[in-house]
Image 1 (tube, one colour):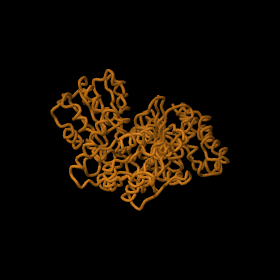
Image 2 (cartoon, helix red, strand yellow; image 1 turned 180 degrees about the vertical axis):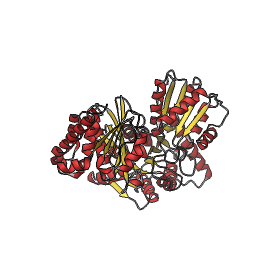
Image 3 (cartoon, helix red, strand yellow; image 1 turned 45 degrees about the vertical axis):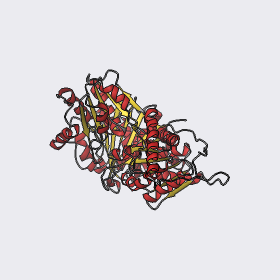
Image 4 (cartoon, chains in turn red, purple; image 1 turned 90 degrees about the horizontal axis):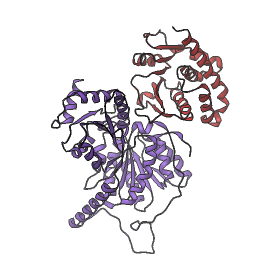
Amino acid sequence: MQKEILIAGFGGQGVLFAGQVLAYAAMDSGMEVTWIPSYGPEMRGGTANCTIVIADEEIGSPLVQYPPLAIALNLPSYDKYEPLMQPGSLLVVNQSMVDRLAKRNDIVTVFIPANEMAEQIGDKKLANMIMVGALLAGLPEISLEALETALKNHLPVRHQKLLPKNFEALRKGFSIAQEQMAVRP
Amino acid sequence: MARELIKGNVAMAESAIRYGLEAYFGYPITPQTELLEHLAKRMPELGRAFVQAESEVAAINMVYGAACTGVRVMTSSSSPGVSLMSEGISYIAGTEIPAVLINVMRGGPGLGNIAPAQSDYNQAVRGGGHGDYRNIVLAPASVQEAIDLVGLSFDLAEKYRTIAMILADGSIGQMMEPAELPEMRPIQRKDPEWATNGNPNRPRRQLTSIYLEPHDEEITNLRLLKRWQDIQTNEVRYKEYYLDDADYVIVGFGTAGRIALSAVRAARAKGIKVGLLRPITLSPFPVAVMDELSQRAKAFLVVEMNTGQMLDDVRMAVRGRAPIEFYGRPGGVVPFPDEIMSEIERMTHAKLNSQTDPRMAWLERALAR
């Protein structure tokens, strides 16, 4: 088993942390995992992305050209990665930041109004966790519980008070993605 | 100890601490800065020496001075910074004292860029500075291997009174993987017989790289080469993947090696008998295993993130007994497994010739793309 996940957005949207949470959950579930960020000069105020590979054996390439799973937190990321998705893949798009519909019908695109949902929960910084929760709907290798445990185990003590809202964000993202994926033919 | 998710740069820094690093001197440069940053915090906490020098030139000369006292000393940098250090590296080699260097390579030449590359292979394995010497060069392909090789590099540097360099690249430095760090080991002052560590109760010791009398320098050069012979005999390390029944052999180190592993698996899934040799010691180069493989392989494919530097060592080892093909992505471009897979498929169909220059044949294909 090997799955590759690409997460992309603006610097400041929690792209890298979202990937780390997935990596922690994979590690704690006993899997091999790599997390690699884009660390080019474009990170300063521009786009950021990271790639997570999870597998049950020694991982070769930490990067992937055609991802089977991706999160696009903004329009530039959506435009860039939609054409690169594998047929049949899952692309989770932050609807709050894009103004167009899907161009491809051979992949599953899930639109999540993550910014508005995050504000409803009470912290707009939770948009990344909503998107991660949504992605889990297409990533059975990592359970919602495993991800929550990972957050609990690896979030610094000073941030532990934020756990309930993070859990709420993950669960809301997960269920809205599940609903959208269920109504598809 | 439990596995933890840790970034390559931080892992190498913490590993050095736990293997007894007593003094670090360096200067920040992407993509290795987290290494220095971690040590800036940890070394003073432990009462050990950390200096952010005014330049790489100063840092390497501080390493030189500290290494003369026989303590475990290290510096780290990335490509242009290592070039600045090369004079000091040569002095350390000429003085025959142990030191550990980490190069987290980036795209070059010149200022280049900060993306992962493997273009300092020649500089590293041929010594880097002026004069007649070689360094031990170790190439990690994962965070765990980087941790382990830092420990090994201290042991080898001390055993052979030589420089041991970890040749990583930006993606090893920036990547996070689950890995296990060693237990914290107590610092062992070995007090080697050559160390100038300020003991007034014994005959005076002198460490130098100056041999004004050419015959003395010649003797020194031969002594260095004799030591290198021992290193070549005893310290070759590599990892084999799917080589037992392989018709085709890919050779790749570090990040290029692990990317090639993905391609090898994809090719195996299609029934192509291909294996991977991943050199861990780039210097000394794994010649004996190459020798053995070149007697049974149909062809070799060398994959590097440069324009074919290790390729020359492979050609010297294979000595025309099998065709060699090359695939490279220089300049900080990291290849995808699919690209290497295409090369494997091309190799299985093409009529290969061991007389063609694999680098120039690749250049033609690369320019045509």
